[in-house]
Image 1: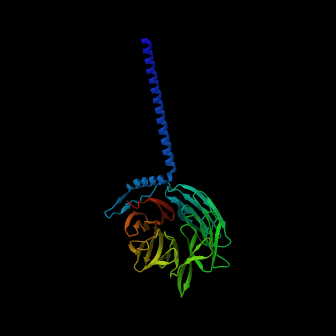
Image 2: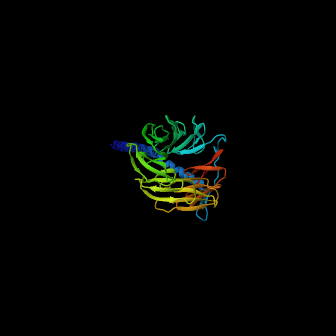
Length: 410
């Protein structure tokens, strides 16, 4: 009897031990499954949000890498060392051909007399597509490039991967523009009018036609590419004047028109509030979304070039009599223009939303729109212009393209 009881106790203990062991295995298995599921969820979440965190990681990596080669001086200016990138750089250019450059997304594009080529920011050639256009012109916006034949009748739209479409017109192209949404405005000759405006959507479908009895000198799109602003040139008592008007692509009527502005329009920009900024050869002006004049600025010197982004304007000027060059910055409609005298020759200007970048013979300098120098880099005098993409600057010369890293802010 006692032996049987001992066996029962032993068996119960054995079964309990076995059950605990099995439960332990089940618990471990459940924990492993839970961990694997959590890892899968995290990886999936990182994959879905990769477009948000990868650029930030790249920015951090670039900043850490470049901060070793940039120092802040006693005036708080960030001095980049201007060291030229190696590897695939410099990109060689033939001195027997003329080149145009631009950015589509984060890709560098180079247009020659015969080819349209796409490069990564590391200088690797990703694609090259030939063309047979004469007097070819390149315009870029967002992730697309517009190539058209000035005084010819063909144009096409490119991405970094392929040619999206090509069109042939009946009349000769005077100029063409592309919007961030991929819409194309083509101004061409006409037998009936002074010129003709044709607008194509992002797929290459013609959606709008407008004949003009006045000479169209510039076109820009509104913020959503549902319409465009057109500037025409005229003369009033011997004075060249410009007038801008808005058209929507669903109507033939002008939505609004500005008063005559006594300057020759050089460029045209849409403001953040869907207003208008006219950059003229002798003065510039802001207009509201109804075409009402808000504020203007008359130049003291000869305009070399200008740029505009997010309501900020930057312009470079020369004064031959005093042999000086200057940078004028306008920090929005409510601010008075600020003039900065620049030592040396001002070659090129790039305006961004927060900073304006100028190239002299031996430096690239970044200014905020209050006129303060925030960063700079020393460069060679062999370059005539540059492109900026994030913390990368491509230096454009006649026979080569180089790259430097350029940190703009601390």
